[in-house]
Every structure is written in structure tokens, then in C-alpha cells.
Length: 501
Image (cartoon, rainbow, N blue to C red; front, side):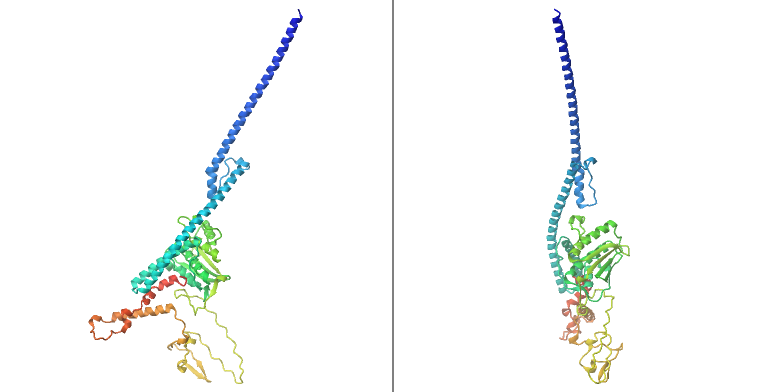
């Protein structure tokens, strides 16, 4: 009887212990589940934070960094902001975002170059048509100048020709910036003519003073004449535009060790350091030229200079200040672009400033040894070649040697007195007549015929007896040479065009 209760008590105790063991195991499982739920919640929170951070970085990339990177392609001074979270910079995410910026900049630069090239091609074609039309207009104006001899009409035609020349210069500069050729082929010309030719293409050419210190006959090779004229015109245009209208622009032509320098000084406001660096970068021609870099409206003068300096191996410097307070621009033409012309056979234009240099005196040559037995006569003194001394000799003996004495059978030349009248030049040795001399002669003829017409009586009051008027055909308007008016009125315009027109 006592065994059954003991067994029941043992079983109950064992069940109780099992229950306690199962309860403890259940508690441990619940705690482990709670910890795992907490970890999951933390991981979810961390994932949500990372997703929000990544979203913020992408939004920051799209809103701030990509536009700044695209703007940096055209404006190098702009700064591209970094990642929104500084700790992202050295992570794979940060490097991936930087790669995106590099790819965007490369593509923007490539598309910008392609679009600009298309714009330059379109402008190049348009300026070619404009240049052709302006050249046709120039020819028409020249024909009108040759056809009509009324002074007022001629002056109007010359003013229109000058305006057309300025429009032609602007079209030519735009074409050069867009990669076109200069458009004109010139013969070898005096360098001073190229400078005055560039000066003549400007509205304020009368404010430019040119000092020529070159050796007589200093010239440019044919393919450098038009580029030098364009560069001088653009440098003078900048000097005239950025200086007061009552000030002058001084141009000096000097020889240097490696060639010739054309120095242009203005009395303007000058440039800041940033403007000076940008201008020097443009005229150097080292960087590619894009129309979008030239402003709105585009300023093409310095860009055209840079393209010409790179194509024709010229040097331009605008980094110095002028002694007058403005900017000093120096164009250097190296020796391989220079040549020499005989100033007697092909003189510079009459309107070009004469050089301040004097030709070097000729070295005396030693007399040839006398092979005869008699004494060698003293050589006759050679006077200075004034008014074509050698050309004045004729075959008329004493008439050809006026003022000469005969000694030992040889004529001796005496110094002329101030009252000695000049003799006519022999036809076979007469130097070629320059167009400027012909213009002066025709101008004098015009003045004489005008005076004769004003002094002649009215033909209506004269009896018609078949006797010609006083003065003959030379005084009649039907025989008036139209070139006289054109030459007289075109004299300042010849200065405008020079030899480089």
C-alpha cells in the first residue's frame, strides 16, 4: 500500500522537473527570438538609413555636382562640390559617383565641340557668301568712281567704299575665326604698306600715328601680307575702341634681332590681370577656339589674331602696359617672313609714312691699276645724286654738262648754283612714273581747267564764227579727264587701302 504513493510522488516530481526544464527551454527560445527580432529591426533601420543616404547622394549628384561639372567644362574656375557625406569620398560609392562626373564632363566636352564645329561651318558658309557680295559691291563702286568725275559724287562713292571696306573686314574676321582662309593673295609689299592698309580698314584711322623706323625696302613675303594687315587692323581696332576719342594711337615700326616689331600703344583704361591673361591666351592661339567662349555677341578680334599667329608663325604679345596708361600690343614678324624690295623700282605708297632711317653711304672702291705709262688722271668728284643726276646726262655735249669745265680733255662737274634750272630727264633713262605723280598732275590739270572755265566768257554771248573758244579743247568739259577728280578725291582713301588692299 505504501509503494503506490511513493511511485506516484516520484512520477509527480519527475513530471514537475520535466515541466520546469521545458519551461526554461521555452523561455530561452522566446528570449532568442526577441533578440533576433531586435537584430532584424536594427538591420532594417540601418538599411533604411543607407537607402536614404544613397538617395540623398544621388539627389545631390543630380542637383549640384553634375551641373557644376558640366559648367566646369566651359568655366575652369568653377568648383565641383564633393559628396554630401564626407565619409563617402573614399568608399566604392564615392568612387563610382566621381566616375559618373568624369563621364559627364567628357561627353559634354565632346558634344560641345561637335555643336561648335557645326556652328562654325554654318557661319563659314554664310560669311563666304557675304564676302563675295561685298567684293562685288566694291567692284561696282570702283567702276562708278571711274565713270563719274563730279567731286561731290566721287566723295560720296569713296565714303561708301570705306564703309564697305569695314563691313568686309568684319566678315573676313568672322571667316578666319571659323577656320576659313584669309581670302586674298597679295604680292610682296612693303611692311609699312601692310600696316597702313590695316589702318585704313577702321573708322577712326585718322587717330592713328605711324612712326616708321625701318630700313628702306623692308617688305613682307606674299603669304604674310594679308595676315599682318588683318592682325594690325584688329589690334588698332581694340586700341581705338578702348581709348578716348580725343586721344591718338601710336604705332612704331622697329627692327629687332629676329625680325621686325610693330608696337601699338593706346591711352585707354588698360586691362585687369584676368583680362590680360585671357587676352594673351587668345592671341597666342594655343587653345582651340570655340564660338561659345567669345561672349554674346562674340568678340572675334583676338580670336582671329590667335588663329592667324598659329597658322603663319607670327608672335603677338598684349601682356604689357602702355606708357600712356593703356595697353601695349606688340606684333613680331620673324626674319623668314621678311623680304626686300628696291624702293626706287617699287616705292611704298605715297600716303605711307617715310622712314626715319637714312640709307648707308656707299663704300668707296679702289681705282683700277693703270696699265699705261702715263700718269693716272685724278678721278672726277661725284656729287650727291640729287634729282636724278645720272639720268640728267644727255648726248648734247655742253648742253648735257651745263656748268662743267674742260680740263685735260675731261669734263669736270661743278656744283650747281641755286638758280640753275633743272634739265629734262632723258626718255630712255626716265624712272617709271608712280601713280601718285600722275594723280598730282591730273589734279593740277583739273584745277587749271576749272580756273580756265571760270575765267572764260559765256559761249552764248560769243559770235558763232567757227573760231574755237579760248583755251582750246583742253578747257572744255567734254575733254575733262575723270581720273583727275577720282585721284584727287581718293587721296585719303589710298592711305586707307595702302598696298595691302
